[in-house]
Image (tube, rainbow, N blue to C red):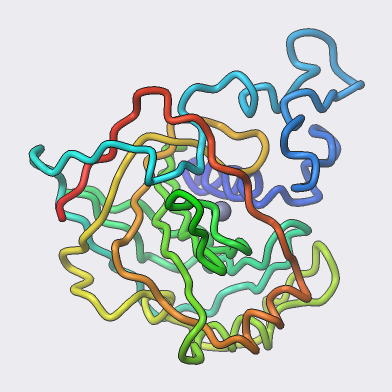
Length: 263
Ligand SMILES: [Zn+2]
């Protein structure tokens, strides 16, 4: 039970959901350069700057992959996904469109021998990770959180191309209002169908230490970016932008971080 509470709490924090507004101030992507300075006037030092890590952190996300050095010489964990069908909640967080897995969902990201449970997935427009001047039209983040609060995010770049059936399901079931939740769709939804057509038992990836890309920008997040991308149609991208546009954080300083890869 305690584990589940922790996971739910972490899920709420990740979501930036309105229920934490009582303990953290509002924020938006247009003022991301000064997230660190947003003050919680109900608190005193040092708690009155709850998003300080956005400014003083040295392992912040996202990053510019073109600026990084890559190392494919180190032995890395096998990476696999064990997602299965679920009846999720479609959640308009106020910052992104998101899908929360149900309490009975058991799938996750298997890193070596450990499986980190999938809590939610959400979308950014345009992509947060960039390659020099190149951005993708959008980016998908699968967020995994262990009972003791460790976080791993699997990121997938999204290009415009063939229509994506499961993404259409998300668009069609997403509440229009900020903070809205749709948990009664009854739709069977397998998050694995959002992944590229690759070997899900042995993913090719880039990994590095990073953070949440939204306040409070907490570090200690392990990132895994897939080398393969997925597509949505232009009409789907346009529809996504009617929910949120420019909900992407700019690339952050690498600060000597290198990227490990099994490519
Ligand atoms: Zn994200």
